[in-house]
Structure formats: structure tokens, C-alpha cells
Length: 204
Image (cartoon, rainbow, N blue to C red; front, side, top):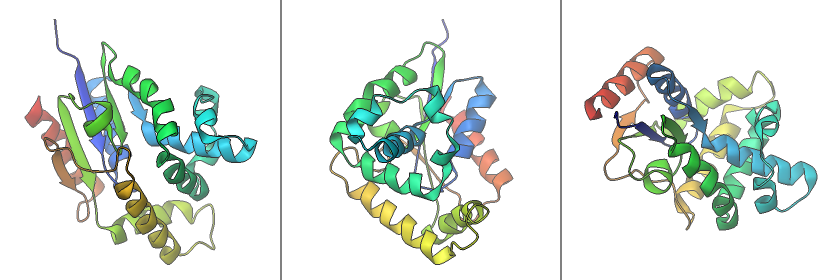
């Protein structure tokens, strides 16, 4: 029997981990979960329904995850805020572990996949880039929705999120000891994809 392939992709906001993780999932025919979207959904639901974030985390379904509002700047900020709450992380923990433990294998991207959710993953990548590079990438996405948004505002958001994600007491953003580092700061998308694929193959 073939051992399921479980790939954990961690890293800070706008590092490119989501794009790489989704492509790796397609490469190996594996289900893919963007765990950051779960926290965006919890934060968004808590805000629009004026309910406790931990309660909101229990109400997430496919329809909620399809809401385009989750892709915006505000949803990203709320995600970082609610992700620092242990009760929210606890509410989403089983959902993520069940996804990771599918018999088919899986690819998950987030902040604590290789350290907390799937510490036994066969492949762990930690994707990062300099804050200034990540801010420019995110700004180019968001400015299409909000033309008044400045690069400086996005960079400030990135630095605040990095500090919050890395500094929280419960499941902070950190590189697993057995993860492979991929810094995409100076890589074009094609080179980043090729490097990620090469790193995964080296572990398989």
C-alpha cells in the first residue's frame, strides 16, 4: 500500500505559499486546504454577525469559504487577530487535522501546519520573503479593489501581522526544525514553482 503524501507549507503573509501549495496539490492530485481562509472566515463571520469568534469558527462551511469578502485586506487583518485566540485555534484544530489525515494524503498551507497540525508530514516547506517584497505583492492585488490604498499601508499591515503571528503564545508562526526553507524574495514565479517542486521531490 502506498504511503499517503502529506505536504505542509508554512510561511508569513504574501510569501507565495498559497500559490505554491495549490500547484503542488495539483501536481500530486491531492486535496488542498488553505487554512488561512478558515481564520479569515471566522474573523469575518464574527464581525458581520457580531458573535464570538470561537462560535463563528464552528459555523464555517463551503458557502462561507466561497465569500469574496474573505480575500480583502480587512478579512486578512481580522484573521490575524482571531488566530491569536486559543479558543478559535482549538475550534479549528480538528477540522484541519481531519483534512490532513485523509487516506489520500493532502496539502495544507498556513502558519502552524508543520509544527502543530501535521508535525509528521512527509514534506514540510517554509516559504518566506522579505517584508518589502511581500508588501508589494499584496499591494498589487489589493489596489485593484481599493485604488486609494498605498504600499506603505500594506507594508505596515504586513509588519503588524508578522509580529502578531510570530509572537502569539498559542501555535506561533515558526519554521519546523525539519522543514525546507524557500525564500522567494528574488525569485520569479516560474523559478519559485520549479524550486518548490524540486524540494518536494527531494523529500519523496
